[in-house]
Length: 369
Ligand SMILES: Cc1cc2nc3c(=O)[nH]c(=O)nc-3n(C[C@H](O)[C@H](O)[C@H](O)COP(=O)(O)OP(=O)(O)OC[C@H]3O[C@@H](n4cnc5c(N)ncnc54)[C@H](O)[C@@H]3O)c2cc1C
Image (cartoon, rainbow, N blue to C red; front, side, top):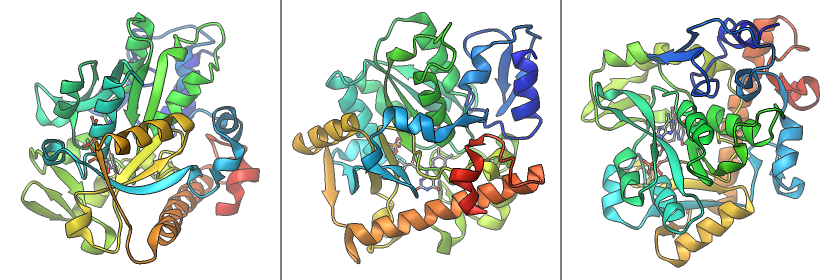
């Protein structure tokens, strides 16, 4: 079957497509507009890179993890794990523009300065549409990283930018920041599933994950207007803040992208490091300027240690029940997302034996049913 048809049938038609962009940037056939991925021209290849890179095409995720991460570092609830920290950027300029504590911006900037990576695929407000309708971008100057701070809850197809950069071959250690769907795609690429053309995947330098509950519908977001800083507050607040506007979560939830309901990953398990909002005993007023940081790989650990050593990151205690308590909370939140996703997929297929992109279905994911 043509790859395009297979991808359309297994991912687009089943509403699993996340608009990550990993099928794009290599050919003229797949395109994305306003958060929707579609086929622009028919392509008659039976073996296309698009189908191998897509994070929602079935793949043995356990085997993929084992290829890149040490088994002894694995926590089934949240993936590869070498440590959990509460961090923020020490630089107040970074914190001012960042989504939470600016940990991600500070780490990417440092990674560029210290040669861990030579460029980075990020997301930024689009020139045409202001803060609405973000787009992927490639930066190589550390000074430009801060211009891309903040979270895009509309998911831009930034993996298309990665594919294009890999294809062009100008950079050999590209960093990529992404939600869990994007970071999974990055590891699929790194595993070279299509041996005949790996699109220079060895040139992916590091992968930086963002925790993710869900993304929002592009057009639906427009009704709230432009906002430089949008955030979804922890559960008990039941609201989204868009600059100084406070929006009841009941108005926002209908805009959650359908595909996000089938996503099993909250903490971006395929990554060197993953960063999310802080949840400490101090409460939101303090936590909104801090992050939780999971170290997953040796390279991630090396970058983190350097950041602490150089005073780039501030680190504080979780308070309350300490790191163990914070880890237990994180595991519970992550498992809740897994359970909802696996149940939603089984309901969609009508059988627990077909969990679509989650392989090997029964062995690993069956316990969440
Ligand atoms: C759709 C979405 C849902 C999220 N849901 C949760 C959640 O439920 N719980 C939680 O704890 N955290 C969630 N996060 C992560 C959170 O919003 C912050 O991104 C994270 O805490 C890092 O904060 P920071 O201050 O270090 O980020 P910053 O220093 O501001 O850096 C963020 C970096 O991420 C890049 N970026 C932003 N959006 C995207 C995107 N869509 N795709 C690719 N790159 C992007 C930016 O270009 C920037 O480089 C979500 C993020 C997104 C994008």
